[in-house]
Length: 314
Image (cartoon, rainbow, N blue to C red; front, side, top):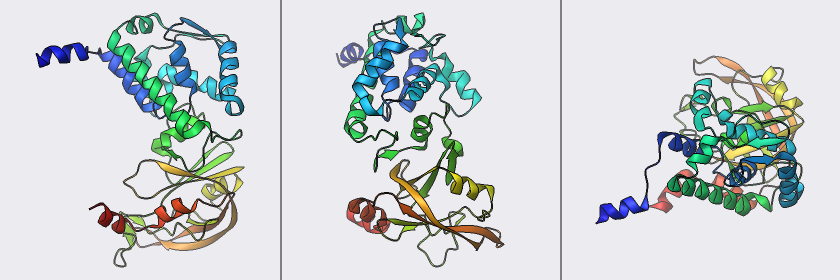
């Protein structure tokens, strides 16, 4: 009897359907951007979507936050292009959701229309769209500013940053410490580094102990990557970027970063630090000023000792 119930509850999904669900879960389920989800919703009923009509509808719904370049990027994402390696694209382009499109229309592939007739697959795509759009409404919609796809103090993965910055592919594997994307630079900080609090350890997991911390709700001090002095191309990328964004997570156990907002650099001073081989190398000690004071509860959370938290959890 129980096996009969299971059979009623869940039909088997095919390998291609699994692949499609896997790709969409990785890329659009987080709900950081609604456009892919809105297109998928319309593809339930339409073989063809007018881009002009879709643009008008989305402008209407998302008002000040609508961005045409992001909509164009969303179409590419649904072609399976949002990957980090060519081998991944060869795998995920087989999701076959969108066919060749032009400046006027998005076209649904016939094989996708057939898959949507499969009840279990339809239900799982429908659930994915509902959850993604609900997350967008709950976390991002009301608080998103007109000039930025990011919401202050919400959490984003490196993959989300790649998506929202319209990189065209997932850059998370090369997005460590600092990443310059066009006029924007993103600085990724782990607030508590493993081993950093021990006086006996020179290194935290093979990395020198970086002095990255808020001195108050407005000022953040950051040590550059080792070997990068003020004149290095690395630091010039940071200094010359029009917009500087700070992303912070509490520990390596977390995969997503709090978006702390934009900041200005008050000073960038050359210094020396010993590398893993015991050699003194150039670094840059940077002082930044946030454009908005950091929320007090978040600052307290980031600064609280990891061991204290573990004791509390026990």
